[in-house]
Length: 324
Ligand code: GDP
Image (cartoon, rainbow, N blue to C red; front, top):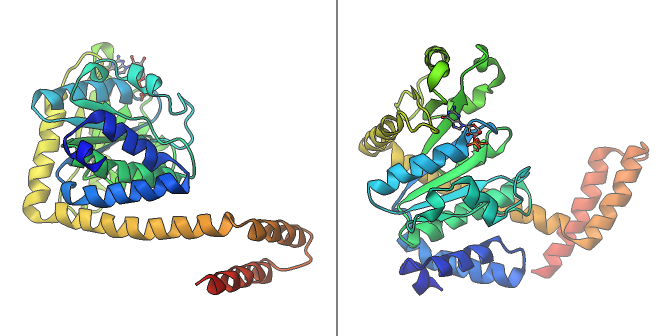
């Protein structure tokens, strides 16, 4: 499998990703071995996170951004983190039809979000899939997420550049958008700057620029840029990409690129530990039964939250210390 991946064989890559996504322990064991062996061949890509609320134009934009990237040479993998998918529930066909042009390209690998599990679990699988894609020679990775929850933070923790797609229109666009997301963005792009909408897009651009000036300078030393474009009419696409090129040049020169990746590696170590501890704890049938009983007692005010938690944890630790 590793050989196939390193040769860039997409069928093998897909099979490996399926193992990564599988919940079966036997599949997980193979997947981890494959990832470990691919790791030395990974890292050599630009990882770009793309977020925006539903309807912002992510699919349309990824389609044209992707083609633009492919025209410059190289290969592109499009991944997603979308745990509470309202859309296609992980159907490949669904994602392929969302990105019509890209899906016809030989050098594009489009993989929908892993569908099972918690956000942390889904995100970790996407993070692992990045390793496999890079080992298979994909030197551009897009990670898409719907900008409505916690998943932006997860994407931010695995990409080099975080692109926020916004829309103009109501005049109070800044109100609905969470400060945290804006602070994460390395670039903000206002989509649908076409036809009658151009003046509004430009107004939104000015508003976002002003808002960004009120934030402290990001640690990267890069002041996020705000651009307008039209995904649908393919206007302003090279400009968006020039900005991203400049960002990469900038952070590679000042060392922030490596710093960010090192921190992300550390983050994922702890995330993986946390997630697996949680899964091990909550997946234990005895603990599950005890939790139900304790929960009832806490709800009925027969026991305090803290002593109930302590009782369950004591049992868990006792069981597990015997297992060593
Ligand atoms: P997503 O939910 O973020 O993936 O958004 P889509 O890419 O599905 O786009 C939502 C709707 O906006 C679709 O009807 C698109 O045709 C439309 N749309 C996307 N980009 C543009 C654009 O640049 N200009 C205009 N006018 N419409 C667009």
